[in-house]
Length: 126
Image (cartoon, rainbow, N blue to C red):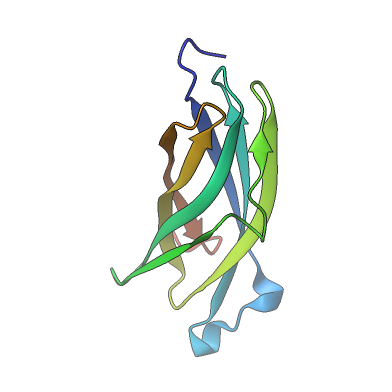
């Protein structure tokens, strides 16, 4: 934990889903598993998400919504919350990034950054 009461770390692992993809129709499916760790000193609740998805052609899609997978989890100091979700793209390669809007138990709103991560069909990158 850190000295800051508002310290959320986000890590993501992505995976290509060939069985749900149709490359001949430019449909590429990816799953991603997100681990959210509360490194702060106060319990924090995830209220909403904001994703920025950029495909290999540079087209940007923004997704905003309440919570994640239908939940607005409370994450205790030192605890983690993990969930999996997915996205479809029209290219073999893309990048996702974003943020979570959080609120600490003291009522202080803050943002948790989701660093850019790659979505790629195996072998699509050299």
